Amino acid sequence: GAFAVAASGQERDQSLNRFAEVEYWDTLYSAGPRLENGPLGRPWQDVPLSEFEHTLQPLTRDGQKLRALVLGCGDSVLPEELVDSNVVSEVTAIDFSAVAVAAMVARNREARPNIRWLVGDVTELKMASASFDVVFDVGVFDTIAVGKEESLNRSIIQAHRVLRRGGLLISVTSEAAQSRSILLQSLPFANAWLTATYSIKRHRSLDARVLELNPEFNVGNLSIFVNQAIDETAAQNMTEDDLFERKLKFEEALGSGLKELQLQRQQRKQQQHSLALARETREREEREAREKEEEQRRIEQEREQERQREEALQLQQKRKKANEEQEAKQAAEAEAKAKAAKAAEEAAAAAATTTTTTTSVPATAAIDPALDAATAVAAAEQERQQVAAAAAANEAAAKIATAQEEAATATAAAAAAAEQHQKKEEEQHHQATAEATHREGNAAQPARTLSPEEERMAEMERQSLAAMEAVKRAEEEDAAVAAAKKKQEQEQKAAKEAQAKAEAEAEALKQQQKQEQERLLQQQKQQQEEKEEAERRKQQQQKEQEEEAKQAKKKQEEEEARKKEEQAKQKASPAPPLDPAAAMKAEVERKAREAVRLAREKKMKEMKGEL
Image (cartoon, rainbow, N blue to C red; front, side, top):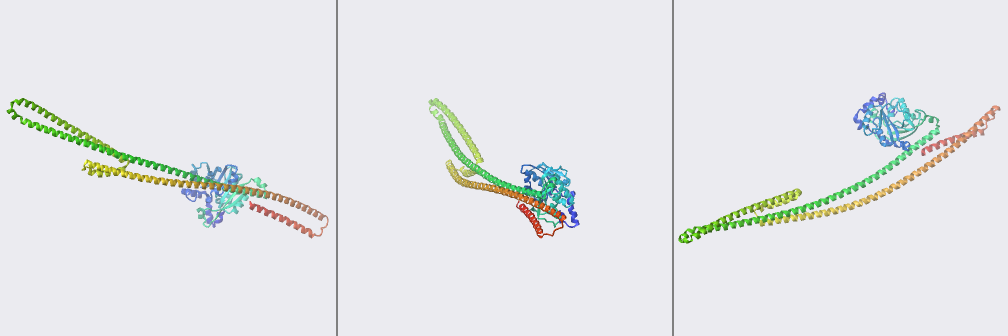
């Protein structure tokens, strides 16, 4: 194999032989991180299933689900790709490293439980004959090739055995195509495979393990062998022409599968593009809906702010009314106090007058005893009036005290109500109320020394300033609302224009896709017609060749009969002298037959090149 050819020297050959030892691979696969992050755990040589997916098309055209076997799977992701491709119903993966198989079982236990993982030797498969539709070699033949050649031969024979007739062996190899083709032509018997080979570029550098063993080894390309298994009886009964015809049909089917896969990929790309356009349209609609919702929320917030401003104005009016009521009560209290003071003064004056009159009574009694009775009556009346005046004074004092208490209670209630309103306002409009409270506090400090009239004037001035500020803020907010509304209209107009443009582009793309589909259908029709024409020409040529072969055979038989007749005549009579004309004619006929044969071979090569 390529590894053995690339190696040089006995020591290097011994190193390469490690590829055939299970201990080497168990040690390699025991490095857990390499199974996930290192050079392993990905497509072999970075050749994904998509590189040879078209080779499965001849087997899946009738919707059949395939049974697949992956030889020497290691930690290749090919079994996972096959399950995910939805063209395979059963996947069996085999490797002789139990460590690698255990790691792959753990990695796919939940995600892909339907993959069957086996530990075994690919040179001695335990599967039943004809139990798989397709067998994949992901480099295990290259590994086996560094050991004994008979091991590689047994592996190919086993692959042919487990394949159903007409099934495929797909082998990706870095070995030279010529050396691998020689083996496939003779194993397990002559003409056991119909083989098509094509080359692809190596996607990445050589595996580090290979370079470690042989730094000089370098292959720029990889070969993919697609081999169709043939029944032994059918292979024995096939002529070279039959084998050649079957090989041409096999290669034609693979080429048709590649075209079909390319068409499917193009259609899938167009569908993805359409889905992307639909997704963009949906996202744009969702974005516009969100913008509308945000605008609605903004309008609601503005309404809420307006309602809060109205509540603030109402609260200011309530405070003003409470202050006016408090001032009225204070004025009533002052008036009651003035009346009580005036009554007290009048009572005191009456008491002083009575006392003066009582002091002068004895002198008058001594001069005029006749007035004693009248004086006694007057004294009694005066005493009664003093008692009545004292009672009136006490009653007035009680009324004053009661009025004072009522005024104090009303003042406390008004203060409590104002404090409650102020607290509520501060919770809802913290900043605005804080500023108002600050201004009121600054204005209230000197108010304690002002007269009630001056205090009322200051309060009115504060309220006027607050109202002016509120009006100003309302005007600014109205201007902001108008600007936002104008901006929204502009954005809506731009969105409508963008939507119209997107719809026009989508329509143009739709028309373009339609034209492209029509072109593809026309191209397919033309290709089909060309194919039918080529098939017709081919059949015509075959008929002509068959007719030529019959004529040539007939001439040959006539020639042989003539020769036999001449030989019989020669035996019966002495040999006549050699006729130069007859010899020349025989030579011309021989050259004509040789030219016909060469023309036939050239024509077959040209037909193969066209297909």
